[in-house]
Length: 161
Image (tube, rainbow, N blue to C red):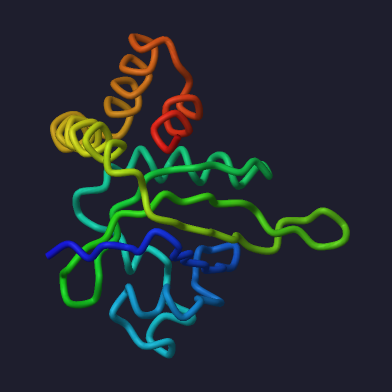
């Protein structure tokens, strides 16, 4: 069953360099269906829904590891099997020397019309991944973006307007 975020909800979490959860706000914990003790120290992918194509996470990690923020639509899985969609902004957290010490994610409710585009896109990418692997899914994403004449960032931001 799908759980809907409220318009003014903000889900916040922080992870260490390996993607293990170090902080989650109250809404994050509630939406996940886990208790805080179960989440802290767990890999963030504990929430990964099977409908999410790996290519999205590959892009996300490639960006944040070089200190570049990224936005993405993500379908998360709750502890009980329910799910919820988010519009996520993920940024690296740096210390005073500029070294990345973790990652910070703020998520809000995605626009309904965005999901009508994202869901079939992710389904295509996931099917390609299952049939031909991650590299093929990556090539398909590039092809789709090229056909639309937009970058990944332009597509994602345009859908949230």
